[in-house]
Image (cartoon, rainbow, N blue to C red; front, side, top):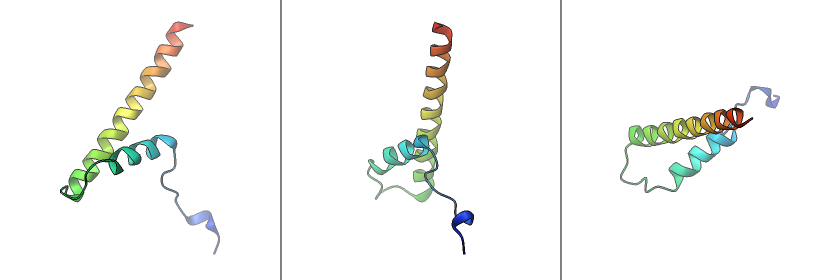
Length: 61
């Protein structure tokens, strides 16, 4: 079987950064839902910052 059917995670550096952030937190007292929320919150903040930086760079030209 070829590797073409496998999905890689993290697939982007932004997913990796969000995962690293969540892994750096104390997870033992968190529910799976809280861990998911923490990951999604981190990912959304990273994406918002990325868009903000791109917009700032575009406006400086």
